[in-house]
Length: 340
Image 1: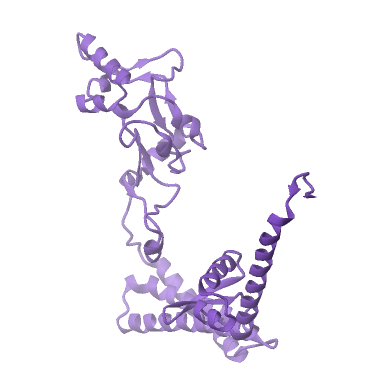
Image 2: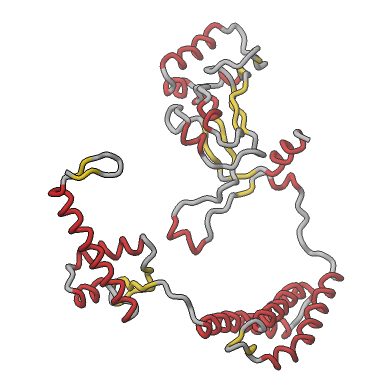
């Protein structure tokens, strides 16, 4: 038996079929790659017909080659996915792509300017300035487009440069002299800001995917076991179990909420409530940290809304922590200023 560099033993009879299959797969993938390079985008059906490799194997090879970034998907043909090799665009292709995109932007800006100039009002100056800036940026972009070292339409671009620059400056200066019509918003108005999800055009592809970094962690006292798991797992030290017993809140727990807790935990709360002669109004601050007792506090300035604490919480039902897709700017400002 042969020996590997690590001292292990290899059975030639066992490795021979494996090596044969490996080499066969590499040959088949090489044939697929060569065929796609020669003939352009092909489907698994085309490749099966031209290589005589079984279609199920062709499909497995295509999946592996796409994973290895040897092939890319470029469309479909009669229900079959088209695969092609990665290609470096030529100078002409880059030029055509740049000019096409720029022309589309210019056409949209031109239509907007024509519409605005039919009945130009003060409130439309901002839109007019934006459309003119599109012309300015497009002109600058086109000056960098060249074929065989020569700038495309260099003479025309030079002639319109000064005209576009003056038009943009006039629009911007006019806009600056107009009184602002933007609504006045105070910080206190931004208490419950909805956290946006992914861009609309990507929702169907990604499903539920809120914007990371924003949100508010809500803590439900009656579900909390005070186990400190959230604090230990938080990557930003944004959540802590503080040595404060919120006794008044304990007396607001419903029997249904207590029944969902572990037996000993629920029994503790029921015992405290039954022994009290009057309803307490003050919290109790413990002399030192005591896992199993305390209150959870979240520092919104440090929190990155990663949901680590939400996933880690072992509390009953859905846990004691929930990420609300709301963001309170006043609370964040308060926490920032308190640390200055």
